[in-house]
Image (cartoon, rainbow, N blue to C red; front, side, top):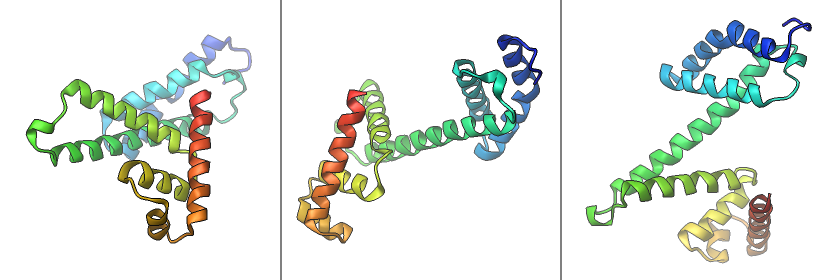
Length: 168
């Protein structure tokens, strides 16, 4: 990229020079041209929002990093959606929620997943066992192979983490 380009010229040049390559890279990773196109589009939207585009020395490495993060989020969301739909399929028909309720629950699950994403795995697991399965700290300790006092530390860590994120 030329240092003499205006910011909009830099973005246009970056898009022109690397969009096709990025879609191909994402298609190989995802196996789906539609999702690859959507994520490439989202990547370039992030580029538009990013300061310092003129300072990028390795555009493909930078685009790959941004696209990879978006791809991971996309795959996590798909996994959550699949697990939720599997749980719904196991429910008797009268208990099945409406499409609107499903969308709200799925969005809530994605938000919860994002909140818990920064926690160490044992703290996240302890929190989920407590909140979703209603296990006591002693039962959680047995499942995780740790002491009850460690479960208390995990729970404090999880609650503090979630409160910090909720206030941000």
